[in-house]
Amino acid sequence: MMGTNGGGFFGMNSAHPFENPGAGTNFFETFCMMLFPMALVLMYGRMLSRFRHSVVIFSVMLLLFVGTVVWAIYFDTMQPNPGLTAHPQSRTFTIASATVPGGKRDIVLPAVAGLPVDQHLGNLEGKELRFGTSAGATFAAATVA
Image (tube, rainbow, N blue to C red):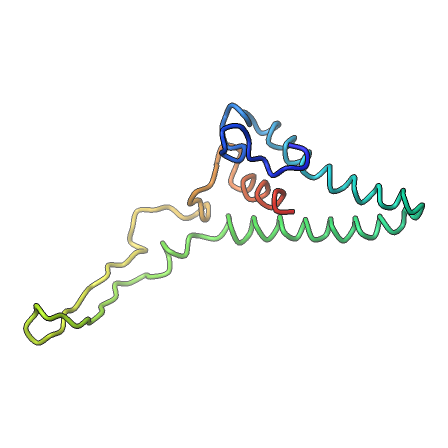
C-alpha cells in the first residue's frame, strides 16, 4: 500500500474483506499511503539542510489534506442523496406525440421523496459501510491526496 492508491489483488480498492479485514487494517493502509508523501517532504528539508522549509510545505500539505477529508465527509457522506430528496412533489410535463389526439401527451413523474428510503445517515449510495459512514470518504480523500 505504500505509495499506491490501493488497487489490490482483487481490484476492489481495498474493499474486499480478504485484503482489508478490519478497521485497524483500514487505518494502517490509509496511514501507509500518507507515509510516502510525508517522508518526501521531510527528506527535502534534510537534503537542503533547512528543516523549516519542509515544515512549511508539510503544514500546507496537512492543511489541504485535512480540508479535503472534512469536505469529503461533509459533502459526500453526511448530506442526503439529492436524487432522492430533490423532488418533494409530483411534476407534470407535456410532450408532443403523434399517437395521441390533439398531438400532446401529459407525463406525470411521481414524487421521489415519498420513497421508503431513509436518508438520516446521508448519501450511502455506493459506499462501503463496514467501518462506519465516514471511513470510506476518508479513505477516498487519502488516496486522492
